[in-house]
Image (cartoon, rainbow, N blue to C red; front, side, top):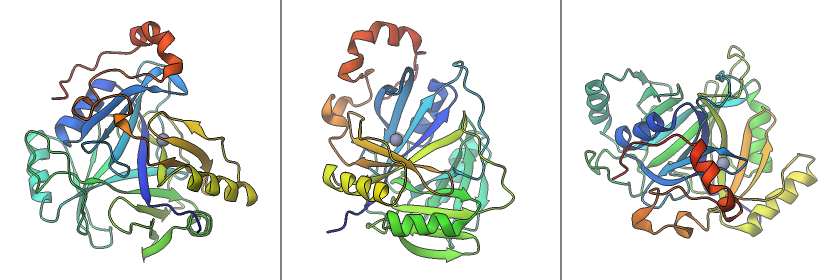
Length: 316
Ligand code: ZN
């Protein structure tokens, strides 16, 4: 059987300061901090994971806080993911309008999402974050203290990829990754993995006016797509190589295993395994409470902890 992508695994962005980032995604949006670790490729910076109760694939937003570490501000543009959309239940946008207004957080109403209404706001680092009322979403939400189940975020809905030539990016997504086109309107094409529901969408938006993207603080670094396990991942890796694309070796990310490659529009993709998941080194009830390091970094723990800023917020 051909390997297949079920949907999104996670979205990863480069952000400014850790504490406001954690406050925004947990206190305001109501996600759970499910892992506090370091960037495995650069352990001087955090890697924070936000998601549902256990950080299931497709619910995960992850950030690298790089304030004060010499990383430039990025530019959102072509060759990048410019919007991360979260799925909220039908009828809940009024709750979110009131919640944002009460905190004096500016937002705009969006109307070009295949008829699905949404609000757009910026996170503390300037990332475009959208709350979108889409189709029925069966994912059980994490319930934060002041957000009821009928308004709580179900997970990521999808991401918007801005490219110069949609045709090439859509062809890559369908022919190489096996995604399907589910809707098309104007210059926006919605693709889906096998699950065909919120949490499996990639939207390719063609733009000749957007600036060229520059990677840096306030921009999305990559999007990860989910496969069941190692066999499917290695089948995709072989397929990419056979078709002449550059792809990395399998990297051990502790909570999943990953390969990385660029699609023709310049966007960095990852294919990540669903497991083993975030309860690998913490109990479900204690996820995100302590700084977790991969075994190969434990010998450096003192130096790593000294270099990381405190996260003051209380995850409870
Ligand atoms: Zn990733």
